[in-house]
Structure formats: structure tokens, C-alpha cells
Image 1: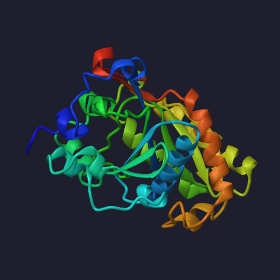
Image 2: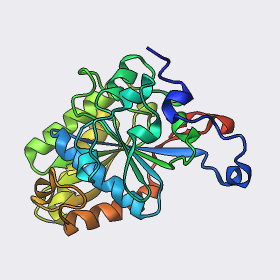
Image 3: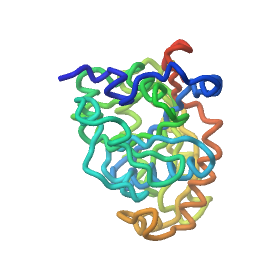
Length: 283
């Protein structure tokens, strides 16, 4: 297997030494926003896809790394190529990444991301590779399976995670279990924080009550910070499942995710610096 960390395999193009004035404005920092659902990877994928689209509409340059198989489809990006094709040198970035909307490129990763994680190679150099692209992103939205990869929990760093939680006792229990699994082997000072996106509460009051219960429990027993992000109205995401960006509008959920896209600029996300800026994952 070729070296999956090679910038040639990741970017498909060598670093442009003749960039001139463009290099003065080149992005040198990538913010990484992981999204997962506590019990439904498909629904979590829809959230990640629609949020990535909202970020692009806010002027961000976004790559959506989709390990769920549902995120890219939710914004109208369908294709058979996978991150694995990039890692094995079978295709270049522009042949694998699809651009369903201005400012948004989608990269399917149902095979490639588990490969990287199993090889211990989903690290600083991999993420820094996105900053070697001719048009580097400033934001990477990535879906993560609720059961981890091969049953093992994994996060791209110690920054905040957006966690989708169904409303109700089952949602509380499932969300707590996911948080516990993710932080169980981490030092407390290296544990991520969580933004709680409640799915299906009857209103803002019910959503905030659920988030507060989960936040108090996570802080008391795990020493983890979990804060309320927003509520998605009942059935809105269920209606959106499998619907492409051009196949229907869902104004309630889209408005909520557009607000989160704006607020995410203040979130403490994992950040990856370009190599020339001293590459390191921080939070």
C-alpha cells in the first residue's frame, strides 16, 4: 500500500512554488468539526451534510469528509469514488471530491477513513494535507459513526464535537453512553467538549431541559463539558433523509443549521496548521 500520508496522494497536486501573491493569502489553518449521532449514523450524516452546506453559504471553504455514506448524498453529491482511491493513488483529489455547491467539496470516506485509523495514520500530517491543496479549505466537517471504527472510539483531536441527541430518556441514555465511550481512555485535561443538538423536542424549553440533564450528568460523572447547541423540530430530519439539496427544502432545520454555522466560529474546534506554520493539532 502506498504511503497514505503522501501529500501527492492526498492533494493530487504538488505544492505550487509559483503561487506569487496568492501565497500571501493562503489558508494556513484548518478547523475540524466532527459530527455524530448517538444512535443513528444516517441521521447524523444528514446533519453533517446540511451543516457543511450552511457553512459554505456563510462564506467558508468547506470539505465534507463523509464516513457515514449519508452526508454527501444529503447535499446532492453522489459518486462511487472514496478517500481510499486517493490514499492508494488510484485517483487525485479533484477526481474524488465532488462539488455540489459553491464553497463545498464532498469526499466519501466510508473505506478510506477506517483504513487510516486502523493504520494509526489519521493524524496531523493527514489533516495538514488538505492545506496543501491548490484551493485549501478552512473548515473540515466530518461524520463519525456512533459505534466508533471497528468498535473503537476515535476523534480527530480534543476540540469540540457536535453530538445529535434524540429527545427523550432513550436519547439521554444513548448520548451519555457515546460521550463516556469517547472519553473513557482520555486524560480529563485532554477530553473534548460537546455541543448538544437535540432532535425532536416539542420546543426550545423541552430541548434545553434535556440538554441540561445531560450536561449535568456528563460533568458530574465524566468531568466533561457538554453545552446546548440547538433543537431540531420534530420529524424535520426524518423528512430530509435521502433528500438531495435540489430535491426539497426544509426551512426549519435549515434555519437552525444556518444559525449554528455562524455560531461555530466561536466553538473550540480542533485546529490543524499548515506545515510551514508549524503543523500541530490543537484545540
